Length: 145
Image 1: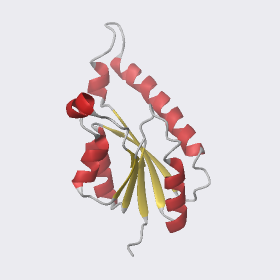
Image 2: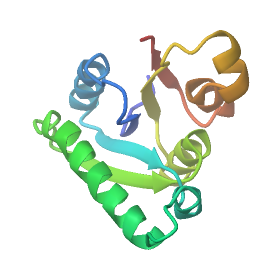
Image 3: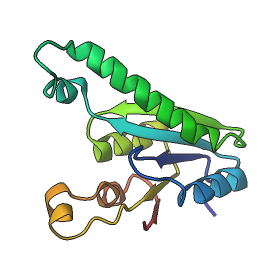
Image 4: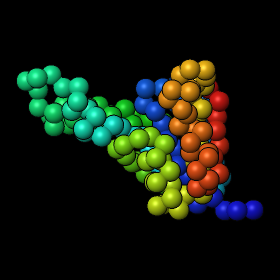
């Protein structure tokens, strides 16, 4: 059996992660693996495109990032029993960033939700989970929501 030493647990902070936490914690504990709690945010250029005329795009981005950090820390607190937990906030497209991170870190497993998109929404936006699975970078445990 392949040893699992590194696990990526990407979370969308706008969605509930309650269904995924038991899988992430159980597998990380079972294999005494490093669990990378990862979220992906838009690049500053994307955020700046929606700024008010008198607003400072960098200040808006910094405020947004503070909110993201608070949210991911709240998720991390629910994983506090894990001996080996690392938090990463990545910027860019979600699927590409998750795939690149997994490849760079030599990750053995990705645990993520499917978010249940269907129909036109899936056709227009695609599925982050589908893209990560198709990348073939490592096995993916996809949890339906």
